[in-house]
Image (cartoon, rainbow, N blue to C red; front, side, top):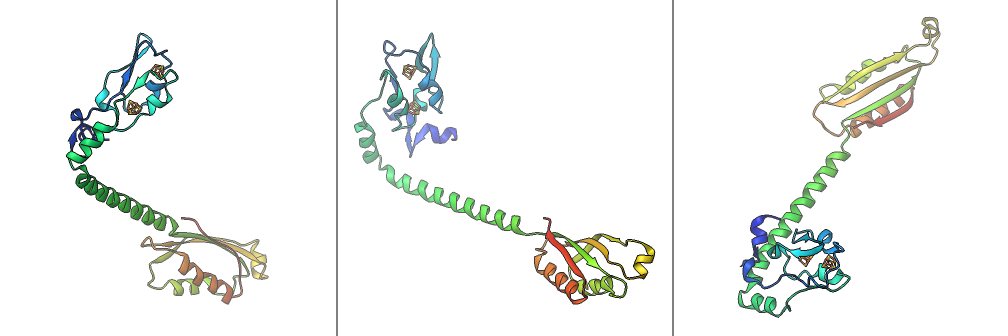
Length: 212
Ligand code: SF4
Ligand code: SF4
């Protein structure tokens, strides 16, 4: 929370609001529960006793430390004075503006998270593995034709042929490559056309997996 926000409460200077904890030092057993619980740094422990050294940092209306103190050593004023100030200072005009800003912040955050999720779902690269007899299929030529002027490319191409004789005798070979988008577009629709080509030329698609 910013210093400005802490110093005023919905437009009312914090020092004008009579809401702060008071510790009964006689009743305090020094358990330190209030000290570790308060997220606003209101307390310090001095000689085994809790002392509210920054009482104006206390959140208006909060009474958590008082509620959990095992010896009920912490007390607060009644809320009547706070309610009176709410009416007199007409804080709800300010509250309405603050709520509007909060809604806007939350909407912006949600929109950003949705955009990040959408980006995360976009795969710009995919690995393809194919097996079969490549000899007279002209697969790479047709793949190149498929790419044409589209913003995709094929990289890390590897062809594993068992033996030279095997290739001549049309033994099955293994090919792997990665399809990438040159413009960070989703690769999945183009990947489908690559899969279609593999099928059309009679090769076996081992896998076609988006990798990011
Ligand atoms: S929680 Fe109560 S008893 Fe424990 S340190 Fe704070 S004031 Fe003292
Ligand atoms: S009431 Fe809440 S904000 Fe105030 S001192 Fe206790 S824990 Fe901290």
